[in-house]
Image 1: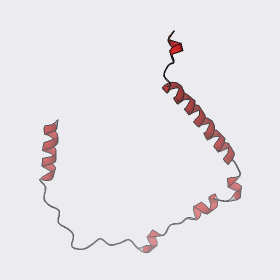
Image 2 (image 1 turned 30 degrees about the vertical axis):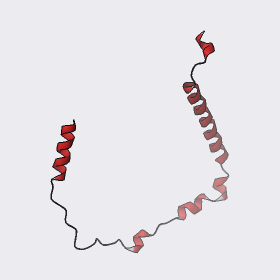
Image 3 (image 1 turned 90 degrees about the horizontal axis):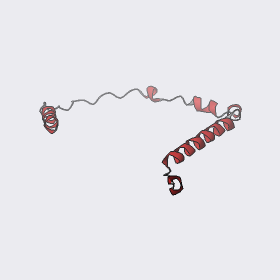
Image 4 (image 1 turned 30 degrees about the horizontal axis):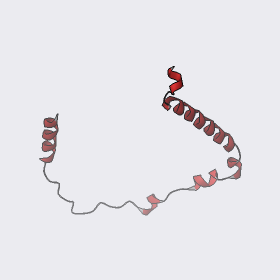
Length: 84
């Protein structure tokens, strides 16, 4: 295995050296760098924030509690009283 790795590294290192380019690549136009962030403004409207956020939080809390109980149950070592 080590021989194969050594030969493959040697084969990759034996290539021709890459020469630098004479000119730098052209930058993209400034207009293409503008971002439309209007999407975030519509998410902060009061109608969306009051609709069902508490249900999402409750759902996540119940799932986290269930996963916590499952992990603790699996990872807890058996006590001495269960060996009898």
